Length: 220
Image (cartoon, rainbow, N blue to C red):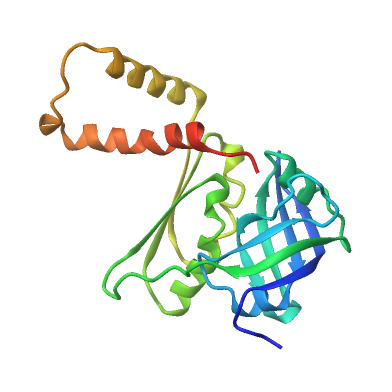
């Protein structure tokens, strides 16, 4: 029975698909998530026998398969919680609550949806792309990462007819960006934001996500 509310379950792992480096796809059985989840929603989940972390953590839902009562997560192993989930074997369970969160809303019919993601942040855009295609809406996907290895799903959106662009941020570019930011902070000359050119503002916006994620991310 599908309840329309988030449901806590012991969700058995159906399939584990290792990708390059620390990335992995995990398919779990959870009927309510499989039948009710929308683009932008997530689950709270942790490996069933894992003592660390003590609480479930949020992860965006990558895909759902109502026929198999299942959903799939796209994980990067960066901490004890994600490592414990990635170490699960088919048949083992994870404590899971979902679906949770407010779904994405499509833009007006006469506009193009711009989907911007970095690394494993691309997860919620697979279902959103399916919804947009079903409604015959235009969309463009921008997919970035620090290295090419972070663009693990770049070949898994081709069937959605999205105009796409994928880019990696090299170590040299990251170092150059950090040097420019340090120079700007230590300069004694006042900055006149009113005179910044569109190119200046674009460069600043392009650097912001990387500096923010590096400073503010928490290991899961």
